[in-house]
Amino acid sequence: QDPSIAPVGTLFDQSALSSEKYGAKLTYAREDTLWTGLQLAFGADYLHDKTFQELAQTDRLWVPELIYKGWAPFVQLEQKLFDDLVRLSGGLRYEKATLHVPDFTTIASANSTFVEGGSPSFNKLLKNAGLVVEPVTGLSMFASYSQGFTMPDAGLILRAVNKPGQN
Figure 1 (tube, helix red, strand yellow):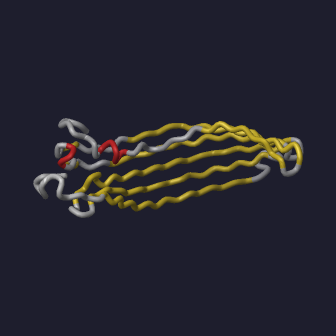
Figure 2 (cartoon, rainbow, N blue to C red):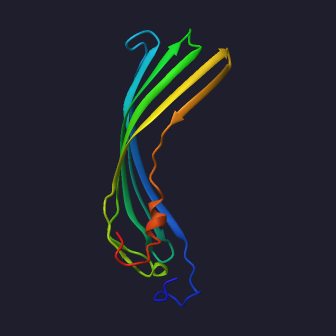
């Protein structure tokens, strides 16, 4: 509640999240690449996400407009063995992401604190491996290892800043 808008306890606002996303996935896969049974797949993913959170009744920004851009080229190999009873796979994915945050001021409940924006970026090489065994038709067992990457909920962190000098 911002006492400059209405007396405390008399106005209850509702947050609304607005998000616009677009992206692309491009993949090329080829069977029997260097020898029989080896599949090669490679490509890239792209994501652009523009999001902000407002307090709908009073038209105040709770979380400023954040722009996330992520780019991830990848390569994946899969080898079929023993008449396709066993499949081994492995791959690499390079995640590169940037989050642009403008300068903003939090709402009254977080002390109307000015926060300096910025554009932190993250990158990481991620690995995966897998094994599928099909001892009889229709029954398959698998084991896999996969690393992942995701952006934390930056809005939750940003809207709670209540001490000056943060960026």
